[in-house]
Amino acid sequence: MPPDAGLDFALVRLKQASDRAPLKLRTAPAENTKDLLVIEHPAGESKQVSRVDCKVQGVDLIGRSTDKTDFGHTCDTLGGSSGSPVLDPAHLEVVGLHHLAVTTAGVVVNQAVNINLIKAKCGAACATP
Image (cartoon, rainbow, N blue to C red):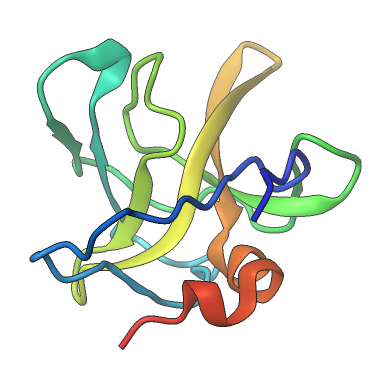
C-alpha cells in the first residue's frame, strides 16, 4: 500500500512473520478520555514512554490536509516521535498515531491521526487477530 499523505502513514509488509504479536487497533478516544500513553523513540534515542498528564485535548481537529482527521493530546513528546502509537493504557490498544504539534496562541498541542480513519483506509491489511 502506498503512503497516505493526508493521514500521514505508510503500511509496510515484512519479508517474514514476526514472533511478536501485533498491537491491536481500538477506536479513537472521546474528548473526555483522561488516560493515554505514547511509546516513542524521539530522534533515534532510546525508547521513552509519555504517560503523565497524557489525555485527549480536542477531537475532530484538522490534520495535514483540510480534513478533520486528528485528535489533540497532551502527551509529552519530542521531535522525531512522529509515527509513535498513542495507546489506551487500560487495554494497550492503539487509538491514534502521533504525527505533529500545533502552536496556537503560544500553547502547543500535539496531534494524532484518528486510528479509525487509518483502519478504514487500509481495510483487511490493518486487521488484527
